[in-house]
Length: 431
Image (cartoon, rainbow, N blue to C red; front, side, top):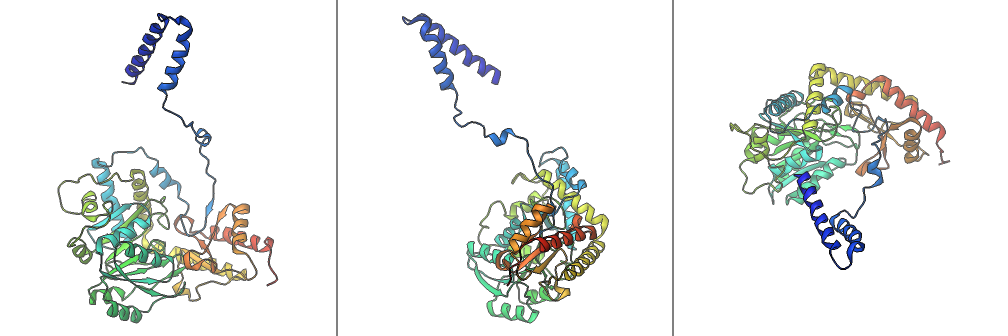
């Protein structure tokens, strides 16, 4: 078709040039006519950007921040496999594998278990959009940035948001939670299991029972904790659980496992109004993932095929290693890092060892130092990412993440060496 089009255009130009030769102006006008025709035929007015004419360059970095973490070669190779159609039977089988892998890492038998096409925020919005309707009460536990995010999401879709707020690093007792639920009578209670902005791993036992007693759904964020700290969706009566692919799971960012139990499904599929998002509507997503019992899957959206390849491989690696071994390794490496940090004279931000998030360690900003200068020095001289706080913890902490593939004592040694070097060479104020 393209060849025929080019030929037809060329023939037209030739005919017009020939006609020009027969005109009174003769041959002198023909080149000008051809030039005008060539210019008028081109619709491109913006040239290719110079950056697009250069090869892609990405530096090798040690990602020892709160995520994403470095991706192991096996998962990179899986993501680089030849792409197949998102509706091919082979793709459905891979999605089925992913579902079973998520059920294992979540420790759940929930049928309504899928992976969102998007980051952890996609799962966060999916959970709220599908189980809450405008005008309903929700209760959000805020002790860092993730509770703040969920509160904003719920407000944007018209929920009545009630907040329980503590400073970064604070945690809520079961008594405080039950009193707030009795007061506000929410349809949904949100809690972050792994609050990466503060480095806190929040206790979960007993909260699901409280929520069930008061006919309230229990939503838990495990983006920073899954694979690094124990979580048992069914045993702990968690109604909705989600995570992200890019932390201890070690897949690239862009997919987000989520699961709903029967109580959540009953609320979700007996709504009076449609969810505010079409893309995140579980009525459609449950069919796309083969969870609705229907014989055929209908097109809803084009899933991230390569991302699903990588997620499947990351779940396979965790299944081969075993959850208990993964939890133990993260705990052991974190303890090794704690000792090294204390030897450097640094103070851990979460004083209670049992409440520390094994995957993301927070240290109080050392007295007299500019935390930004320390992080810039470490990146420049060691090609290593560590980060400051996030949201309400900005200016309070520095964060070191050793999770999944990066969870090794050799990496802890590298991080400690980089910190020691920065403390030695960065300017310290007299204060």
